[in-house]
Image (tube, rainbow, N blue to C red; front, side):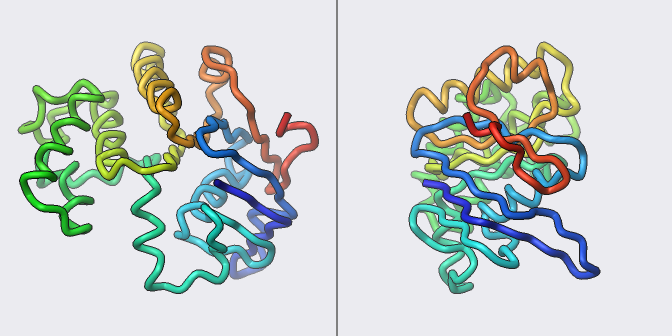
Length: 221
């Protein structure tokens, strides 16, 4: 499902965000990505989503090599990947329903089928009754759940989350984690970046630990 082979990512100016990173994540597996701020977690997630490309090495997503994938093939790849960003990236001039609808509009879904999917996604995260609310009227936890609904509305095989509980209190963090657990139980592959130790303790799964761009020995077991 996800395979990194001796991946390096070097940015202009010489900064090496990732160095010799290799690991496999199986279909349906849930894995945490841990490490200090600046360790390379966000860069790694961007490589999985083909937002960035590796400087060297191979990143295989469902057998497709991100380093050599053609630009026109990237949208099809991303339709199978749900992204939950650290800074939400919500559209504040659109209500919750329209925010979740956007990926389906871009993909050209029939409006009636798309509306059903949007309401199912909002219901899954407990926001169906808030579909007409603008993001500014939602709490931090509700905004994060709205991001999750937008990420899952296309029913992706892979879900990537960048510090999804970073700015939430313990109660909201538990809600978000339970949502992820429900996706894991139905076979979605999850890679979740986090520095929240309470998350690791509440639902312990395999963790990949980055330190200054390098995957630490033993972190994949």
